[in-house]
Length: 255
Length: 369
Image (cartoon, rainbow over all chains, first blue to last red; front, side, top):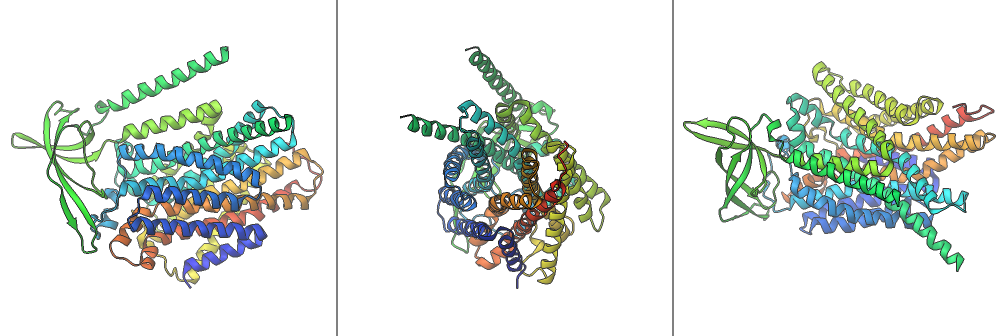
């Protein structure tokens, strides 16, 4: 048995034991997302435009992560709407920044790994980079959107007469609480995977100018910064949508 | 009305700071030692079509660039360099007039010659960092900047530990990073929660969850003889790739486990505060419920981070005639193993955090802090 199959079995077993029926759904959502990501790579290899492929894949991933991870339909709907808006905004932000910063493809530090390859493969590495950046932020925004939406709904349920400014204030509070931790998750997740790179940089005696300008370092930093912006935006938009929803609901009752 | 005026001032000041910063960073050549050249003229040759053995067609174009040097002792001089770029752009890039580039300049006889060393990217990095700080400030004023502080502090420690690792050059350097992981956890928790019982319970849950997940992961890798996993495929590895991979996994999994543990423990402590008579059993049950709802999204966060990073490499493998299993083993397997071990850590943390909180909070004890 391969190491990956064994680890997958262990994860599935633990998720079912700890989570019961919800654990099965959660495990399935991970499997579905994996299949989607794999399909994205195959489709991009096949020559379909990477940005469009990842845009549609992104919608599916958000849907799966939110609806399969959260059982309350009302909060799921709001979270899904908010993440879709953020997905579109992030695309508009990432496309020009990735283009101007020229961080596509591979860095010269990777040459050992890629020297066996002929790089003239007719793929659009800039578009591939954009899809990488967009897709890697989706998990974090889905999680943040669910947390804010369900947290706010709880607040509204406990205090039915709550005013809109109070809702926005609570959204800010909840957002602040989850933001610190989400930043940590992103930070450790991304820099953990770049550990080898950092050791290499130290061995190369990189100077400050290198950190501010080298392709690989700027690329990794921008990835973290993009995710941070996405998380902040999703907190704003989710809070706004919850407030708007509440307002519409109240007007309906009034009439 | 007064509020509106005040916030307009705010917006104006923020925008002004952005403009000043942009102006400064776009003209910061004097800060660099290395010569920086600005493209002043571009002449392009006709593109050449290429086709490789796998029938991938591409296009390369040679361009003749004239640079004006902006700093250092050759300031004001111009140099000519030619550059070849491809349509796919795996390692090269197309230059346009106005772009700035770091140059290696040397004298050959009486003429100046130069090669391109790197593109100048600092403007984009600095401006985007500015955008993040502004957004954080707008969302929650100076409080928001505090959540950046813990990340920055951790980053500084991280760099320090990397330096320590390079200097000491130990055989078992994994333990340096394992130790660092404990420091990261303790520091982040004290900064976010403060030093109290809640912090202690969270810390213990994270420590146990991470350790057990790592032991399970290592046992599984050992039992299967790491079949299908190639540590050599780790990019940039300059030390034992297997240990490097484990160290990276510990740090990667820490964030997510921290997230899960904090969510559960803080919810349970909050519950105890609002309902002081709540039973141990109920606390454990509620902790499990919180855990169940965050487990799926959290595992997905890591899967997406680890998997999306391999896109460029996977496309390169596929396009150069490699099979799906081969490509998977050499480009994605390491990331998937990392995501799986992290997932195991997240799931294990749920009962551990619920149990520990229930034990500490259960009975008649009041939450004193």
